[in-house]
Image 1 (cartoon, helix red, strand yellow):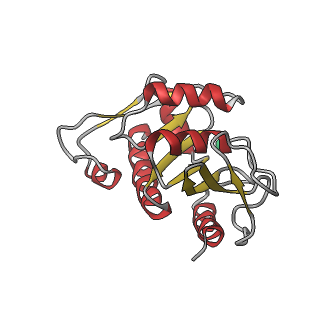
Image 2: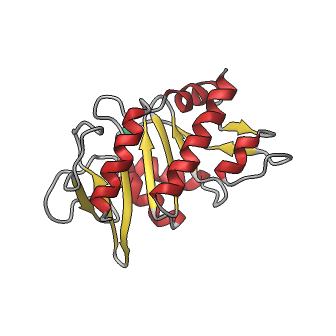
Length: 190
Ligand SMILES: [Zn+2]
């Protein structure tokens, strides 16, 4: 399956979960590393109705290579892919991560929960802190804040009052991690 169809299929799943309301959120897959190229869902479209052609190729700065208008957030996707080595990055506007960041602006602590296994960590005796960075419209500033708090064993980032980024080797692994993380964050916000 080509990258565009994979992105459309994943976006439809997230939209059905209520995590890509309006036209919010964006998904990306790495097409190549030297130089870095990502396919990112196109900006401004209903994420439940994307077709295989509704994506844009961007470079390491999130700027378009060829036709199409990527989301401004493509710059942060590219930064995350470059720093983490991930093959796919997903960004959604689920509510629980934003509520959790509001309560723990210095990072959301999680421990002793079975679902941590689905996030790639241990269920017991392993304090996992999900980094939180302030929201903003300059992706270089957000990227710098992400990189300062980056840990290779914690494949997620919450942008306060905005949404969450999760990444993995491919879109499927990123989705599994996001689904488990969203459950964990829903649990802690109560
Ligand atoms: Zn967003």
